[in-house]
Amino acid sequence: MSKPWLQLSLLGILMVFSIGCGRQDGPELATVTGKITLDGQPLPRVNIRFIPQQQGGSPSFGGTNAEGQYRLLFNHHRAGAMLGTHRVEIEPAEPEQGEDGKALPGVQVVKLPKKSIPSGGLTAEIKPGRNTVHFDLASR
View 1 (cartoon, one colour):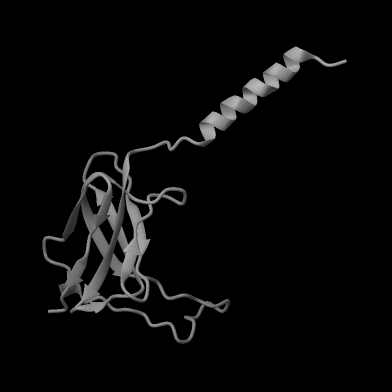
View 2 (view 1 turned 30 degrees about the vertical axis):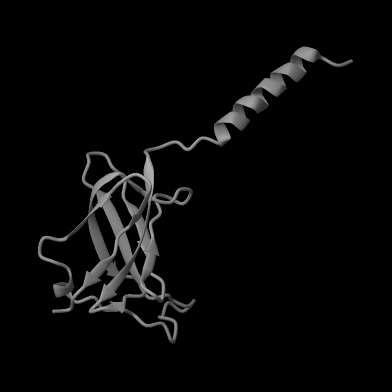
């Protein structure tokens, strides 16, 4: 014998979960891509972090490919960065390691001269929509 109240309860629970699954909780984000160069040449294998200046903001992170291009991630499920002014940090990525803990052969480690970051640091303003933010660093 079927129990209609049980079926309706289960249907209600499924509807609540299906509605909640499509929501994007958290702050409004904007897409951020760009290119990092050093003396005009693409800077591969560096990490980049955008740290919001607003109180309680969460940073976004990314890394450059062989052409020096990056795309920011807010977390593992959402791409982009919070809106507003950000302090930007750029640093070389750690070399990839094999099972023995040694750097893999053929992986070039990039050295970033300390002089390449301006004394006041780097900043970026993120606005709604798509943002393209390039950084052309100089070794001198």
